Image (cartoon, rainbow, N blue to C red):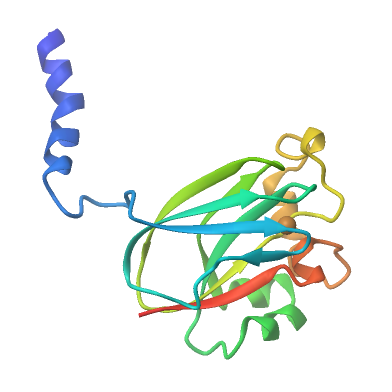
Length: 166
Ligand SMILES: [Cu+2]
């Protein structure tokens, strides 16, 4: 009984360890990004396709996030999405992954990057401090205000960058 349970849990992990790809994403080449008010630093203009581990090192005084979106092919520049409504913008891109970091902290996520164009965006509301950061903001609420032109978030202060994979 205990042995059967062991194999059920452990076997997929053993099989995955021997394969290059095992569904989902896994730790890959590191892409280390620094976040400050209100810009990303260290994000390459181009990346090779494949597994990547994105890290965001928060060197600022407010909470920051690295939210990576893949842009649809018909999007010329991420900045053109800023004039769209939330629904229109979401139709033209999709989330690849995100990590949120308090000041002084580094957080990361793994992503399998296919060729295309991407944007790194910080959607944190201006003035978000650690004590109110992670628990104080409902993530869905934050998503809802992303493309509200009246939202005073880091993206609206210019905290976004584009890059290409391929
Ligand atoms: Cu930010």
